[in-house]
Amino acid sequence: MSPKAAEPALGPRTMLSVEEALERILSFVAVLDIKEQPLLTCLGQVLGVDLRAPFAVPPLDNAAMDGYALRAEDIAGASLASPRRLRVIGQVAAGALAREPVRPGTAVRIMTGAPLPEGADTVVPFEETDEVERRHRNLSLAEIAVTVDIKAGANIRRAGEDISAGSLVLERGTVLRPAELGVLASLGRATLPVVRRPVVAVLATGDELVEVGQPLPEGKIYNSNTYSLMAQVQRYGGIPRGLGVARDNLASLREKLAQGLEADLLITSAGVSVGDYDVVKDALAQMGEVSFWSVRMKPGKPLAFGLLGQGPRRVPHLGLPGNPVSSMITFEQFARPAILKMMGRQDLAKPTVQAVLEEDIQDRSGRRHFVRAWVTRRDGRYYARTTGPQGSGILTSMARANGLVVIPEEQAEVKAGSLVPVQMLDWD
Ligand code: AMP
Ligand code: MG
Image (tube, rainbow, N blue to C red):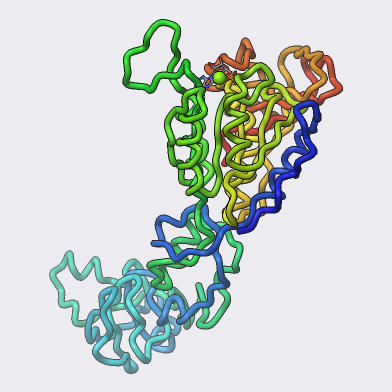
């Protein structure tokens, strides 16, 4: 992929709408190349080629029920009062082939899925014969009586009724779900050509951060963004690569950023607000191109975007704010669509429902507000209630949410009972 040069003219005072910021970001990420992968690893990925069926599925006419394969004309007019006796010449199990053809006056005992013997045109289920009664009375099963008249073709699955030989089974661009993987397995595919998953490097920055599993000195906090962000990468189909924590000094940042050059996308958290040490900005500017944006959204106003590296292969870089809620919400709005686009997905919008707001929400920020909420469904309608205090450092407000109520920029207050759009967090 060959991203264009990053836009130079944008300074920190440039206020972008969420849509403008997303559009700029997406213009720098391209669909990745196609890779042959084992079938089961392809869930959620996009098929890279049109796939045709090399043979029919099922390959042969076969029994749809356990019973007797026979010729319909032999049982014409059969009933309980007037059963038709047939000689049983053999048995065929699923996976086996009948040894002899069915001739007039004969039947073959057959199991579901077993190929239909030559000459047979119908399967009569056990229940419509006297087999059970014969077993009870210890009578010979070399003969069977059929007690119904069934039309030719009954209880048979035709060769190719699922997939005909040579047909287009799945089109290039199809998102692979469990059903598609099953269909391709039924054609014997062990691997598939799919748009590969992006490797997304995640770097936390800050002198205050301590890795989980370590003791927590006074004044420090645990690095949580790496975990929420890497889990988001994974959830949307990317391959997360944790780069750990860079300290707020040039040497540490340069060393960590260099590791990000091997990824398809680099996500950093923190160090992008106006009051931050300039060291993150300096490091990014030295190692590529970067611009700092102000996005008209809450939480998550500061955002950096750039291209890391100097050579032909430059890595798009998304600099998310450090506050734990802000980084997760800006990820949802910007990193998620970027990852999906790289994976060849067309459906980049977050699934959204209209819900009845259950409480008043005030917001005079003039920015688009993403309010953490719990959405329920009653009597065919969705209802949304906020998850309490909405500070951008209150990560449990996110943990308690299953949706984000979207309050428009210009709206200072939304009254309880209003219908509001809600992005559903767990619907991917
Ligand atoms: P900054 O953008 O560096 O000013 O950070 C904003 C806030 O987010 C500060 O309170 C940081 O301590 C916090 N923060 C930054 N990075 C992380 C992280 N990786 N995990 C948890 N909190 C963080
Ligand atoms: Mg910081």
